[in-house]
Image (cartoon, rainbow over all chains, first blue to last red; front, side, top):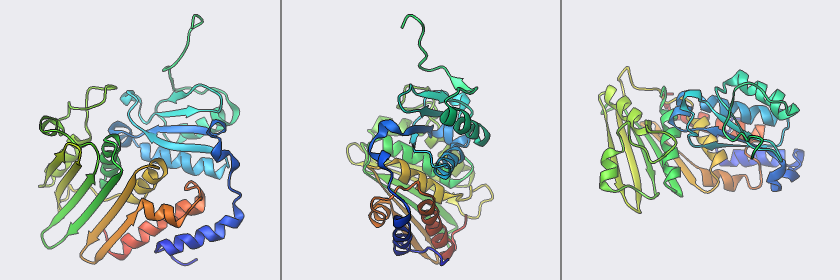
Length: 131
Length: 182
């Protein structure tokens, strides 16, 4: 393959790709996609949030899971960075702490795919029986 | 922060919080004067004089989730460790400019790092804000803007593997061409 050097080269890739991709219908229904927010303030970046975020973007695309990965600010859990907030469709957001690559893999495999909770949840929006 | 690219990712978040619609990131390598400059300029809400004076302090932040704000403080420390300094300019309502100067040949100067990932991740997250990156060496200038990329790829999800690799490779190849130091 030739080297990609200019925006025209990017356009070429787009044209090649466009026939292969069926644009996801879900992108217009955010309530059906998994939403992932990676804490990307100073504390997050310093503890490797960039790698975590890249990993989520790559892996979710690879496994064809419909997800939106975005950056967010500091959630106030600097001791547990990198922190990641995962919102499954129709569920409450859950915040995970100390998310390195292996933790991210576990979150994708166990929580996002199977819906089972994994260790390392930061109790942020838990509810008691009285609520 | 281990690399310049991490600083960029970090300071850009400040600009986004200041509701900027245009963020310019400029890196200049000047061998002649042994100078390495990082400029981040935005058109956000800006700061008044008292805020500006406090901004580089480690215990100043506009958030209420925590009591420290280390972004600019760490950049300042890094610059000063490399015989450089940090200059902040800001005007309320107009925007802010962060200038960090490093000694190019200083052994403590952080490497550029994977600036392509920083740019890509910002592109992915910030739909409203235009982000421009400009890198200058004595061999030439490389410029990329998030608007250009968006216009070149209408209707394509940036998270798509080929698109992601394409954008990253585009930046990498061009930076290699102008012999930027990573």
